[in-house]
Amino acid sequence: MAEQVGIRITADVPGLEEIRKQILGLGNTLSAKYMASALRSAAEKGGAKDALKAATPRGPTGNLRRSIAIKSKRYPRTGIGIAILGFRSGRKMNEPYNKEKLGYHQGLVEFGTKERFRRTDRGTRASTGKMPIGGSYGRPPIRSAWEQTREKVESFMLQEMKNAFENAVREVADKAKSAQGPF
Image 1 (tube, one colour):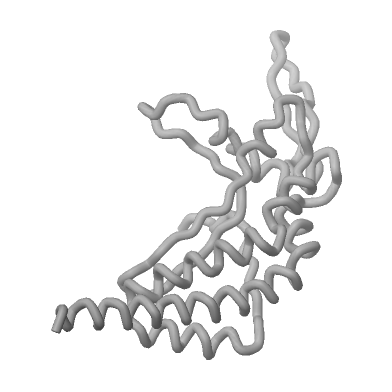
Image 2 (cartoon, rainbow, N blue to C red):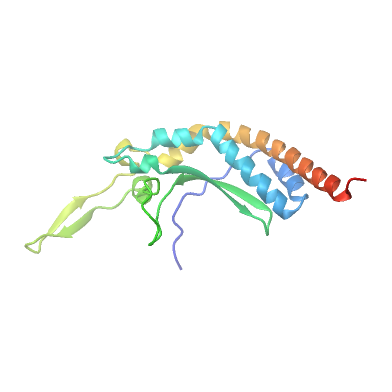
């Protein structure tokens, strides 16, 4: 079985579960749409992306900083929407070059590496060193960015979920009104 690599960060905000249940009551497709947009805007307004950019070491090329992004994902079958803050990485084989998808070494910076060795021309082993956790800054970028912005993002999360519920109710009302016809 494959080992799961990554960081799972959750937030426990009082009152958020009730709003989530209300949104889920409006239908799976609608709830996924509005939940994902609310979580994305909470992460943007909370300054999580800027904090991650500040916590990420620049490196010689700046590719890791350039690859920072927020992505929202909808799951209409279950009615869940999520937002992910991290680094874009991995181009597909036939995909053209994209200077924003060069964060493939994010795990090396976040988790560090053990000491690595290579074989020399003479057949001896030479150390290539190890990557410390957090790179040259010495602190893991994603975890430290979340610690800096957690409270702000959580407050925006509650506010944005309330706004999302109101917008979803408004959309349901507009659909019902237009389904009735002109008379």
